[in-house]
Length: 424
Image (cartoon, rainbow, N blue to C red; front, side, top):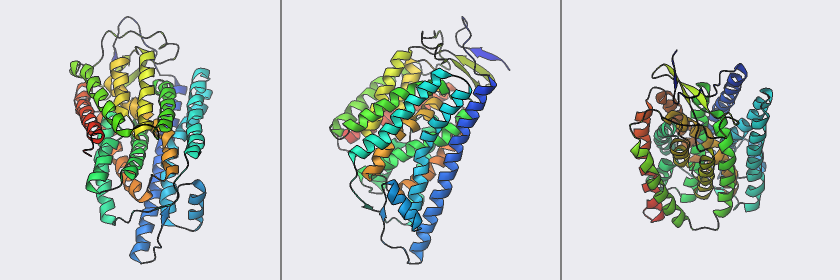
C-alpha cells in the first residue's frame, strides 16, 4: 500500500506499534460498550414509561438530578429513573474513556501521556464533583409529558444532527436547540441540556469507529483536552456571571471571521509544506491515517502547537459558557492553525468534544437542566446518525469534507447571532 507524506523532508512518527494499536482498540471498545449499554437502558426505560402510561398506571413524576435520587428511583422501579440512569451511563462514557486511556498509556510505558491524561481526568472530576456541587441545583422538576409520537419525531430529527455532526466534527447542538425550542416549544434551558447530551452522544458514537479505523490522532486529542476541559470549567463558572446574548454575538462573529482562511484553501486536499512545531515530535503528535477512499496511507506533520492549544482553551470556554460542543472552533484550530488534514481534524474533534462536554455535563445535570424524556430521544437519534456519519466520512475526500464543513460554520455563526439578537 503506498504512503503519502505531506512534507518530503522528513518522515513523521508512525503509529504502527502493536501496543499503540491495542490502545486504540481498547479505547474504541470502551466507547462502543458505553454507547450500547446506555442505549439498552434508555430504551428499556422509555418503553416501560409508555407501557405504564398506556395502562394508566403511571404516577406523576419528577426527574431526578442527583445520584441518590436516581438510585432511589431505580430501587422503586421508576421508569424515569431508568431512563436517567441510561443517560448517566452515556454522560460517564467519556470520563471512563479517559480513565482507561491512563491505563493504556501506562501499559505502553508512555509516562508523558499518562501524566497528560491524568491531568484531564483531574479537571473532569473537579468539574463534576466540585463545581457541580458548588453551583447547586434547583430541586426536582416535572418530567415532560410528550406523546410517544413526539419523541419519535425528536429522535428522527436528531439523527440528522448526529449525521452532520459526525461528518463535520460538531456536537449537533446547533440543530438540536433550534429544533427543540422552535418546533417543540421546549424551554431553552432544557434544550441546552439536551444539546450537551447530543454532544456526548455524537462523540461517543462516531469516535468509536474513528478510533478503531485509526482516523483519530489520539495523542493530539489527549494533549489538547487539557486546554478544552480547563476552558470548559472556567466557562461553566462564568456562565452565571456573563450576559449570554453578548457571548452568542461575539462567538458568531468570531466564527464568520475564522471561516475565511478555510475558504481560501477550500480546494486543498492535503496541507503542503507543513513543518513540525518544536513540540510536535517530543509529544509524538505527527501521525499517519489510512484513507479508505484512495487506499493509501497519509502521513502528516503538526504545526503551531502553542496556537492550537490556546485556541482549544477558547473552544472549551465557549462550550462551558454556552452549553455546546464548540466542535467548529476545534476543527478550525486543527485545520487552520495546526495544519492537520481535514479528516484528522474532524475525527479528532469528535473524539474531544465528548470530554469537553462531560466537563460541564455534571453541572447541567445537577442544575436540573437535563429532562430525561427529552434528552432520551435526542441521545438515541444522535447516536444512530453519528454512526452513519462515521461510515460515510471514510468514503469522502478532504475537499468534499471541507465543502460540508464551511456551510456548517456559517450555519452555526448565523444561529449564534440569531440567539444573541433574540431571533431564536
